[in-house]
Length: 320
Ligand code: SF4
Image (cartoon, rainbow, N blue to C red):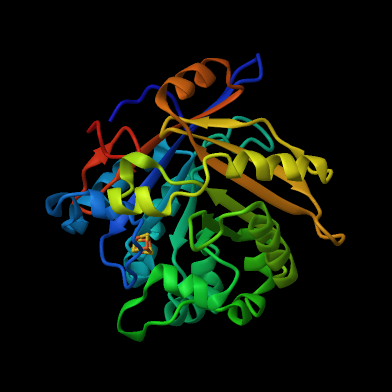
């Protein structure tokens, strides 16, 4: 793997660059979403060779600012992930910083789950020692209504997903500091500005202050889902406009080499709780190239597959 820059680079002109790794830690998932990215990959890439993957992560974690463990459903392998993080953690904290308050050399970890109820409540919510290993817990939650959310995820064999009541009852530290609700906008789910606003209000009422809305990435969305379920092309733009008009302020947009831009807003919908609302917009390649040139913040995306292969993009095109 190339060693072209460290976990984060800050330039005098204000530009910031960093690297992000998404790990498909295991292919197995109890759900069956029509829009699942994993349906685009072949069997060989999805075949688990954990010793190779763990080795690749142990050797290369120091290249990345953020590493997110996804799947499939990574909670089925939480024990293995925790074992790996214990080994990584020792080296990670021994990295010298460049001065007081500087965390440029630190790698942060996240986990992206669909909310497998039993394991989430038993392992993440009740074991601080596991929870503390992750700075971010990304929960894919595609609708505020439990039944509609369930119908989009199609969990098999009666497995349960976290309900609104479960989310309300989560540990305060998870809700306030770590949890991000990630909503892939789609027909049959969140598909209008009113839906977006309702979703933010619902999160706020549960005490969760961090939500993310995305559109589909065409390259890794199965054709039938792309054609039948893609949300209106201007939905995210209009939602951002609505928040601006409502007094929300936004950070500098970050351009990601995986083909999207991320804009984060801060503000309040109807109470004193400050909400962080982000929009991940997948954009055409020519637009990305143009915006990349002028961006003040950029992130290079890498990905790792269950068989240990690592790629210099999110769609697993160019192997490293
Ligand atoms: S929960 Fe995620 S990994 Fe599982 S089927 Fe849905 S999109 Fe795919």
